[in-house]
Length: 335
Image (cartoon, rainbow, N blue to C red; front, side, top):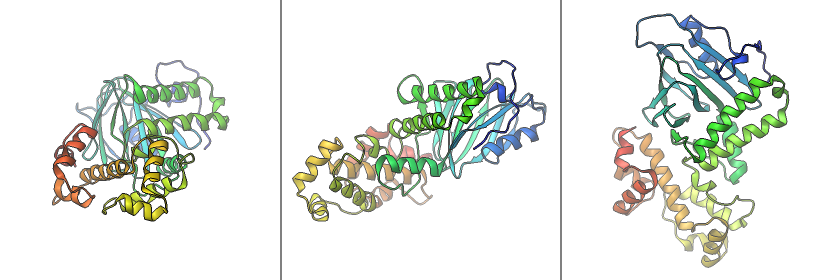
C-alpha cells in the first residue's frame, strides 16, 4: 500500500494529526470518509444539529491501515457490519461505547480496548471529545498469519472476545503498540517507506491478538508452536478439529497415528502442556460459544452442547462458566 495524503505540519494531541483533513463540518462527508475506511453505516446525533467539527485520517501500512476519527460532538454510528476485516480500536481522548448483538459491549476510554470481529453488526456512541484510533486488519491476512503460527488451517472465522482490559497484560501491550505505531507514522512519514519496519510492527500486533487475547482458536496458541511438536501431535490436532463433535477416544487417536496411547499423551504434555482430551474439550467449548453467539431462535443450550459433542451437561455448564466467566444461557441471551 502507498500513502497519498497531504502531510500537515501543525501540532496537535490528535493521533495522526499531520495527516488529518481540515475540520469537517458536513455530516455526509464524514460518513463517506469513515465508510471508505471501514464500512457503510448511519450517523445520528443525540442533539439536533447538523454541524460537526470532525477530524479524520487514514494511513495505509503494508497489510493493515491506521484510522483516526472523531466528530467534535456527541454522535452515534449505527449498523456497521464488518465482513472481511477486523478492527482493533482504542481512544486518544474521550470515550466511545461500542455494542454488538452477538459480541457484547465495550467502553473505550474506560479501561478497555475493543476488537471487532467480522461476525456481527456494531453500533458506536462517541462522546463530544472522543477521538478513535483503530487499525484495520484484513481477515485473510490475520487468518494466514494464524496458520503460519499453528500449521493448522482456520476453517471457521476467528472470533475474539470484544472487550480487552488495558490496565495490564495483552490489552496494555496492544494499546501501547497501537499508539506507538501511530506516533511513529505521525513523527516521521518516511517510515511508511520502510516496509521491513512496518512488517515488524504489524507482526507484533498480530502476535499480541492471536496469542494473548481470548478467541475461539486460543487453545492453539497456549503452548509451543507446531514446528516443535512431533508429526503425530499435529495429526491428532487436525483430526480433533475436523471431528470434535463426534465421539473421540485415545484408542481412536492411537489407531489414527500408529503411535501408542502413552506416547500420544506424553507428547501432548511435553510439547503442548495439556492432554489430548483437554485439547478436545477446549475445541468443543470454543465451538459451543461460537454457536451460542450465532444461535437461531429455536436453538437451546442443551441442543448446541449436544451438537458440539458434550454429553454431561451439568459438568459442561460449570466448565463453560469457569472458562468464559458467564453461564452458557447468558451467552445465548446475547445472540
